Image 1 (tube, helix red, strand yellow):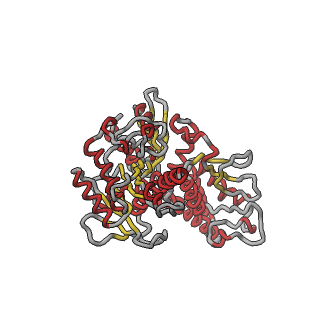
Image 2 (cartoon, rainbow, N blue to C red):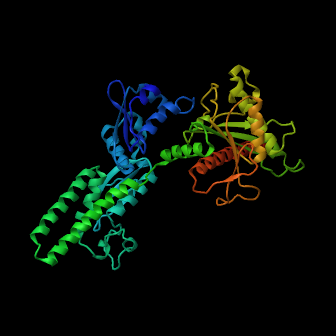
Image 3 (cartoon, rainbow, N blue to C red):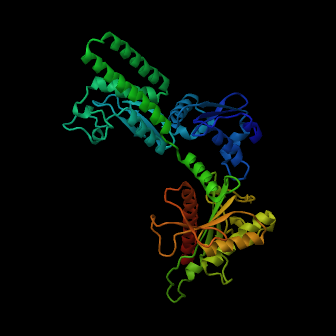
Length: 485
């Protein structure tokens, strides 16, 4: 299948689960999404650029001949349905889920004196288990949402006073004997189990049936005001629980990291007024940490000789480490400051985009490691061929106005039209809570975004990852240089 074939399927934009099938009609992959349409199309959109998908995902895409989906009412239901379907079908490309020890399950401890609901990575003979789930964040958010509907208790044994969660209406009070164990199991634990099994409709019908039965009883006890009021309270309680069930499911956000990164990229495109969501983002940084002089030597010589630059890649908001590149800054050209080093890194990078250099045209600084490489992908030591680096949709520089200006000059030199922004905390401001400033070409004043901004999240992640990658390479080279002396 190709992108045009997928677009014709009219996949809904609702939460749900998608199934990818091969020509034998066998399900080879199952995934969940907050937006089915965007998630499924992202596989083909990301596949446009080389290195955008892992080799396994590229192999999977070649086998797909059919796509099925099941849309549901909420992200939580999509999460639960995905886990149940993966357990049932065991798709080939969901192989990461087969190592159950790595992932979370939701456990209902039915054997405990007070049955509770927990996240766990271990499976024992006791209890009922649901999963596995690949996202710990999604599991935690799901448990929070469930507790708002059915206030379970994790005290395990009765105690003299109610637990903390009882004080905030997130525990039914069984820990202090407010309700019986049987009532707790019937009203709290059984509905939770049904829900985790994906039987929301059964729960809803059960609520509706009980409400109908109580309404019939009201008619029978018209003359008995005390009994009438008692039944009415039960009806109101059931209606509230049913309303709460629908409301919590509708508004619960259990987005996992993959979903969040993709959403951040969309917000970034809106902020920068980009013509499309950036599929490939490249982040750049340089490292030239000062180091003490060796006895009898010149101060800082190791630091200057180990000066490096880094390029990291984010595809659809996710790190693509096979696309990372390291640059060893050339010595003896008088480019000791950060701006000069960045200029060298960007020039070498942009030259590849503009000229599409072949392996035979590479300078020694860009050749493979077996020929003395100073530029290689992280985790790609086994790869021995040079691949063309796709042009990015956005460039993020660790630095301020000066760094952005040099990037703009390099882009103009090679006649490239790529958006660029710089991010900096300013001098002496390295605290995580210090405001980050965004620098745009041609703008005098930087922009400050709130810490909660999704667009800022992805910019900071690219900056921080480029910084980490540069520092690690710098320290590695500095260590080697020290051992030689």
